Length: 379
Image 1 (cartoon, rainbow, N blue to C red):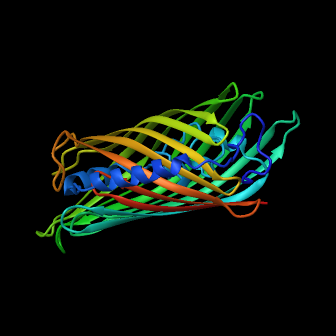
Image 2: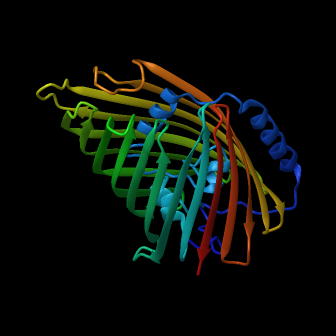
């Protein structure tokens, strides 16, 4: 994870040169995002977005988030362990990376918050054939306020990834994650609902270099586990339901080295999160499904040689929710769809030959405001 004094020749880090054209683009993206980010997210939409995060182990770094979260084809990002595991094979040397994020949500009545962080590391060694073999590990945590009376979402994930190469132009990787978490909300002191889950996920990814300028990337995976719902109401009735959690995701993207100092990236992603609870005495079966589509576009441009990089991006996010069963306390209506635009801008700085720092501001048309910091240290 050396940032990146000796990158693999087939997947080099962008050469930094002295250009300043992206500064105006970054400022324009911030101004446009500020102008559009005025419609507050409603209670139902916030609930749906919270449910969609159950079992999701991917937390984009400040760099890839600044580029519209277009990370599928990026081969030099320290967060690859929890993004595209094929990019783990492009890391050279050893090192650590970390990310810390704060997201504020305006739901019209008050502001809710989300805190994200991840720490990880990787070690690369030369194999018998001369190709590098890289193993990476990462731990992440998501802590999110609920939009109702009290409550929230807490989720932890641990990931182990392996990446290698098949020739000079093809990288592949596998990642195995385990996670657990809890989602709760309290309507009143006595009316409350809590859902807990645990499970695992297997993901695979590839990166393919097309000539000197283009890289294609793709990743996908499946995760599954168990869930249990606990409910209590003001009448003193307490109920429990057991169920299963299943999650699928696919993502593909393209990175284009437009010029020695300019990198463009684009991604299209899909995921589906499904929770099924069995029927039992007095309770109907529940089959809750949340599907998400994301489109992201981003640019990275060098401002100072080997020192400062500016980034900007835009994205479209669509979520479809189907509760599938009349469950007591179900907050969102049937068949609800939500969508929003995001506008991001950020800076990356290199402090010496072995440390990279990044900052990103993320503004969305539903009122979200996110701040993200990341660091990558190689040795």
